Amino acid sequence: MRSIAGSGSASKVRQLEVRALDGKNPVFVQSSDRREEVPPVGQCRLCLNERTLCLSHIVPKWAFHWMKKEGGVLGTSENGRITFREQDGSKHYMLCSDCEHHLGEAEDYLAHLARGRRVDLSKVRVSIRPGPTLHNVNFELVMRGLLGILFKLNFATAVPYDRISFDRRFVDRLRQRIQNDDYPTHSLFVVATKWISVYEPEINPKSMVVAEPLQRRRFDLLMGGWSWTLLMSSSTRVLNEDAGGLVLRRDEPWQVLVGETLRHRRFEIVEDVLSRAFEDRLDGAGVGGIWDTIDPDSDCPCGLGRAAYRACCAEGWTTPAWRAAQDN
Ligand SMILES: [Zn+2]
Ligand SMILES: [Zn+2]
Image (tube, rainbow, N blue to C red; front, side, top):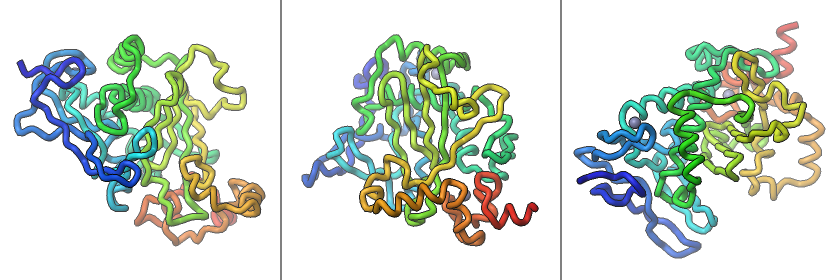
């Protein structure tokens, strides 16, 4: 019996070990499953059928594109001591091809949103208007994509995800929701921020991936230069009243925040070197003011690369002075 059901160890599937550093000492840590010439048969984690399994990326492969360009994925374990490099994130044999496709469709959709240029958005029939607000966002696909990644994290045995596990009831509920595209709007909320690096252009906001379920009620995913925050609660108290358009709702415009990467808590190193005066300048400039300083023909500060600001985030995400002047 070649089943890899259960905790995932009773199988011929072997995990790769990658060189890592524990503090300053070299160690090896468990990473992705080794690719097998003959894919293993086992229980699909999602549909629970006994099927041939695909080597599934935990966080979609596209999210690692920009990181790869910068020399490989830098992973850090939960305790922050172990660091290692990988090419495109962890993968495990866990889903049948149907379920892989079901999640893949949603993850592709998230990729289009994250790239964010008009051309990318129009491919998924989303339009962007001042605010910035996205119109015609597919609620089910966003939910399926994010819940799918959360679901896969539960089963991942690679560092740094090896310590993430949810209770069985929660996993069963996730499974049901993902399979049926059933996402109750009174208990599931998604808020997103798109990061742009105006003041520290060498920091590419898209080159960082962090998947972190903070508690059972909150999942923060930094991926593709966006923070996707998923709040799961039966109480709407988690949101204050101002959050109105910031929460993704079916058939309603969705306001995505645009933030300067210096503001992101994940970029603490940079924040450390920030002087108080610089902070004040940020505050003084306000979000609107920042964009005025960007040369429209320079590389866009979102880190997409090969795209001039004029043709990228200035197209909807920000409204720089030169654009406003043209419009008037
Ligand atoms: Zn399946
Ligand atoms: Zn851009």
